[in-house]
Image (cartoon, rainbow, N blue to C red; front, side, top):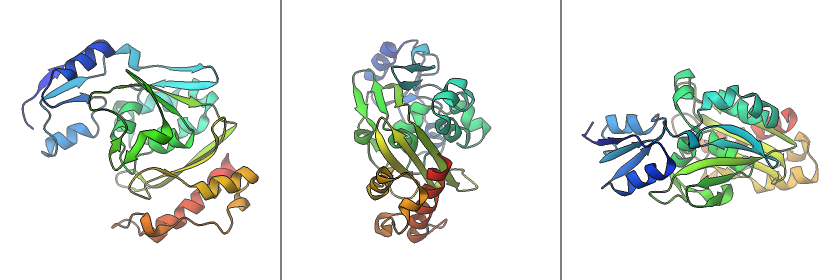
Amino acid sequence: MNNFQFHRPATVADATRALAGTDDGRFLAGGQSLLPAMKMGLSAPSDLVELARIPQLKGIRVEAGALVVGAGTSHAAVAASDVVRGAIPALAHLASLIGDPAVRTAGTLGGSIALNDPAACYPAGVLGLGATIRTDRRTIAADDFFTGVYTTALEPDELIVEVSFPIPAKASWQKFKQPASRFSLVGVFVSSGPAGVRVAVTGAGPGVFRVTAFEQALARGWSASALDGLKVDASSLNTDLHATADYRAHLVGVLAKRGVTAA
């Protein structure tokens, strides 16, 4: 691991100011992806700006019909929160299945969606609920936030402060995990609420995506049978040592039906 300067700001303003003064700095949230990448020589930032000591980035509350979660809130805190369980149980369930206890204790909501790993769980929850990402300078709709493989709409020095999730009438998270990494081989988040009917998929393709045909069918009638005969095109999905694209496409349909029934 290369040498780097370490910064411990106490406010969001201090954090963005610290990063602006670096040659090639990075924000450090839970470090569950960045630190291993640094150890393997895949990333060599000049500076790390730690976010763990910023109170503004943590906390969970219900506000104006939405569940608002601070970007620095850990997966474990979301999973254990009575507020989350009361407002969006499916989101608490999603957080409870991320990684293992060590990852859930250190990893954060903001870190997960800022990295936008193609197999991460939180992007499906954010997109599947039609959430809004609030940064230090603007708000970004979930549909505009995830832009590609490990890429988002964030500017290089932009910091996620919190995420606002509209509280749905019903929602469910279904995950078929890769047993070693516990990432989603395929994960499907379904919901019906203020953002309409949404079906978001992670793990199957090069990034999180919505299945419009499923959404339209469920909008006409919320039942697993509404999805009978509908399929996801496998041509743009992933094939690797864990599963073929055709198998992943099949799983999307199976998990979507399970989610509709569970919700």
